Length: 162
Picture 1 (cartoon, one colour):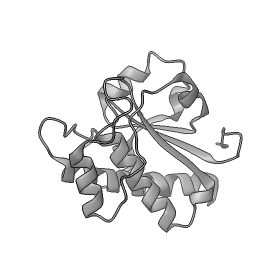
Picture 2 (cartoon, rainbow, N blue to C red; picture 1 turned 30 degrees about the horizontal axis):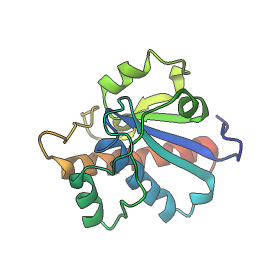
Picture 3 (cartoon, rainbow, N blue to C red; picture 1 turned 45 degrees about the horizontal axis):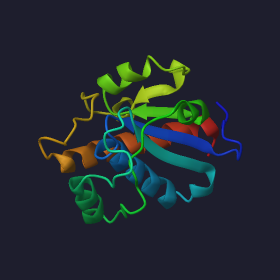
Picture 4 (cartoon, helix red, strand yellow; picture 1 turned 90 degrees about the vertical axis):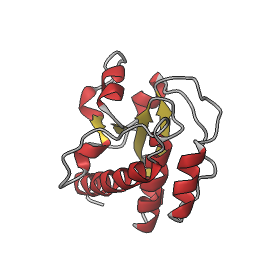
């Protein structure tokens, strides 16, 4: 798989429902792993939501607090709705759950580049990252994002010989 962005970077797009809890958490966690691997110049990392309810807002307070507690800067993350252009330019469209996966089936997108984040997490039998918006399980979402992001980065490094 080759990078589809004009600048030759590998484009990773994380998608959830509103883009204020799970996908910005995964975006920040994945970016931190990429930075620690000294590969930042090889990636374009972003997130979006299938819905527009929170467009323009900062991530949920629970997401910001958990990221900060783990030493990850949540600043600069702003919710937005997924667009056809984002999907067209993404090499990897990584959704948080089966509902997000189903929502993207109605878009014009190469389904082979769409996966769930936890498809990359070894040794766990969960495939959907639960939405913490109503139940407050932001720490669980962080842990699942960390596990999935580690596996995703490993997969990408193997695919692109990084």
